[in-house]
Length: 267
Length: 222
Image (cartoon, rainbow over all chains, first blue to last red; front, top):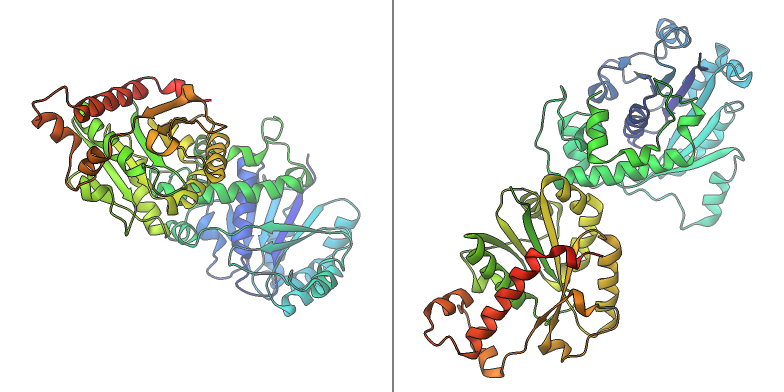
């Protein structure tokens, strides 16, 4: 049986695109046939659940019962990959909880694959989180995600500041999420469907929809670029991605064609 | 049902004859197929909509709303031939968008036949843009127009004469005549009694070439 993998997507700052990135990760695993479940810590409403209701559960990570719900079921769940969308302000406390319950030790011992997608905002405060979060990262794959979806810049214009943060942690890998056309982003929000279903012109219950061809094109182009980044860091390999049925993992970026999206979205 | 043709008449340069070709093409398609529609992306200039107001809609792709309004029409397989008169100012934006949204691939899947009609000239920009179209849309038919008024019989490097459509120059007085709104080529063919007149022959000859090109698009693919 594959080693369970846990991916935490979070930031201590709000509005930096945590849920957007979590959604692209879920779409990526879906396209690669990797069984995945998700936990949304936006308790009680949940944003991630709105887009991926069938695989997402809303939890309150600060409670012991919900921590048990997530971590005590890692080996028994059908899905080998667990994605946790950690709400704003909870990343550091969540990592501290993981340390306290021995999860980080298990990751360090190689019993669990653990990865953190740390979504960065454009402020020094956000960059300060890197140092804070890094202290928990021994044994984990640590990804610093520069999310350009809201036209952010990350102090590239000030190399001293940029280097002092981005090059401080040796084992962190940078990941870039490109900008998506605003209207396309809004239209997916309104449709409340995964990006893949939007590209495939499908509604919540797989019914045919009539989304704009232009907006679907923008989303497809953008999602391909995001998945190229995931392919670059070999995300499917990191989580031990053997698709159901034992076929080799297809390159995800190539799968974001209209037909492939349609097939994947209907799963 | 045969594929729905979408002709995109384009060049990154002004005053090379785009609107003249778009007029000829729209009138020919309306005559040959019974109906056709054109989209004019030359806002603020005297253009296609002035000559063919009944067949032409204006479009603006400077924002996403405009792009949606145009492209969501072009991608429909309804048998209605479409012509886009793409102003030089919109050249880069239009083709960047087409590349990003996968217009040609999606068009192919939906039964659309995009055809690029490119007005050649001697500038370096024209050669670069022609090369860009070839590499970005390798499976799409690309007809280069050899407008004698512009090229003066000299084919620029990078263009293949076999994949070009020659548009002979008209004498100045006839050029002035056809450029006067609301001149219509089809109306002229219908109304004139002198079938040996130069303009009659020129129009018929060009309509024949357009029909031949439309029937043999494979010749214009890489």
